Length: 200
Image (cartoon, rainbow, N blue to C red; front, side):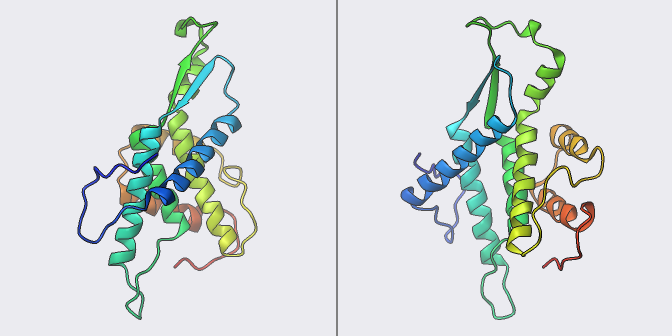
């Protein structure tokens, strides 16, 4: 997959090379496929992953990472890299916008959506919201590991109903990109019963 450069550009931003982008794309595509496998979708589901959507998500996350590095400086004036928590928020935001996973119900080649249980239809309708939440949780878990903290088991570490609340917000609320990154920070600070860690 060759990066598409239709994102608004400025003089400072350069998209990754085709080789680097292809590597990122393959990892993201594999990550998405593993999520679908973990979701244990019924045989009647035909799940499809949009390469174009994955492409656009990766480009926008990369651009925001560059923006953050360029405009945030440490005490020595060097650019600061965005942390894994915020990257998870970025991915979640763009997954919700581009909805890379689609589901077609199929029975022996004949679409009969009206025969699909409502519970399955609801699960299929929120598969991208679930993918966004799964991605967010995964990046938060990676941050914990990088900080030398014990592994997280998300969303089991959350309070009852937390995951359902996240899915509801992802489906029905218009969450800005900055609010999504703040949401990731809030999860780390307040949601989990973990040892105190310093958030920087």
